[in-house]
Length: 250
Length: 341
Figure 1 (cartoon, chains in turn red, yellow):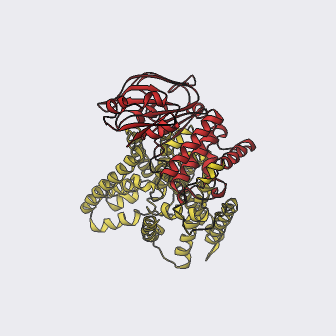
Figure 2: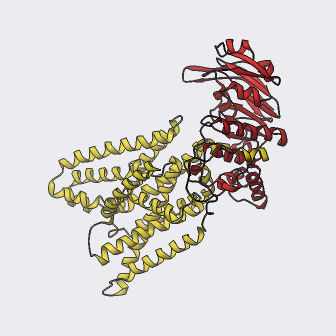
């Protein structure tokens, strides 16, 4: 469980988050949505310790952010940033191999190699394992990063708008991979999404943020309503339903 | 799974390039051994080629120069790789931090104050101490810039270094205008790295400072691999980037300051040439390979270049001047190549 208690945050003089308290239960996919500037990426970066926490308390699996060592936390929590640009010229299998670093600190054993192999096989990267990251498509690169997070073998995975710069095939493929990791491996995935439809289609829970506060939280069909679009997103798009899941008609 | 593999997004980047499977990475360890052999050969040639007169004089005399070259080349090459790793940029060198410019400015000031003869009469130990002290101050300043900055702090550091370097160079130019033209030639002749006049006391002292730092860099090789992946990935893997960058910056400052204080400013492009060559010989991001590969490449370039220049061509031009000229061309080539890629 990720427990956020009384977290406020401001960047410079601008307040971003106001006294947020929220609990993200273990398991499943939780999507953070909200209009631009609502604070969803800020909240995620505080949980990920990419920004340092000033007021409030965040616990991941009972480990308090800021108290527990980075080394220890890296075995519980993996992060995927918005832009996964890596300047180093790496091959796909090398990148996936780095996922084991928190466990072996530079000296991989047979078990680490086995886990990397299974991650490469599981995410269908076998054919491109020797390719350099700058030689493959954006969708393939994101898949390699997810494989790396998988090899890191953490219970929690945080992703900040991973669908940016992906076409529809790449975006759906990535979301399906995450769905699979949540369903089959029991991972807890927290993801910031821009597109409500992806959240409604793939997430188990949605947390909607509005002006630095939690506006709504619950299952997609409870959350994605006309009210939400009007009050939180300030738009009058209509909502249809497909197999019980809401779809925003853009 | 079947659904998954059927849905791969089409590769756009490499249409027409290579086959379905790229070649696996070549064995790098052997290449490092070849580099070590090349260093041994270059050193041997340097020691014996064209020797006239008593071996009892030549071997210690040349041996000391050789040791200074090997030490300086290793320090600057390793410092360059470290700098490129923490900045995530392969066309930067730590000479951007302004140590060279500071050295030349101190030199110009001293010549202005004491005159050329006065400067030459200054004890080398005192000069070394003065240079080291000033460069430590500069290093401290850079460190404060890095720690104070919020995000994007590495680029801020680089820009600060560049601007500070420009400031120092203009100040130096101003001082040089005040210097007597005859004495000015002293400034130009000693503002490039020289290996002929290495002090027999300072050499072991510099080695005592830099060898442990080189060892520390080697100890950090796996952490460096992770830091090179960028801030977010490094943090995700449990290596907080700013702590790592701060430690590495200290290592870089000690290496560059010690090498510069010992022999004077090496060409700004030396590190660039060496890192480009090392990346060509051992194309990997693993510092376990890259650090020794760069250090050895640096030794080959410096010792080999000095042998050719001094023995074969019988020129007295400092090798730094030659490297500066060739390095400029290489730098342009690297920039243009990057643009195309």
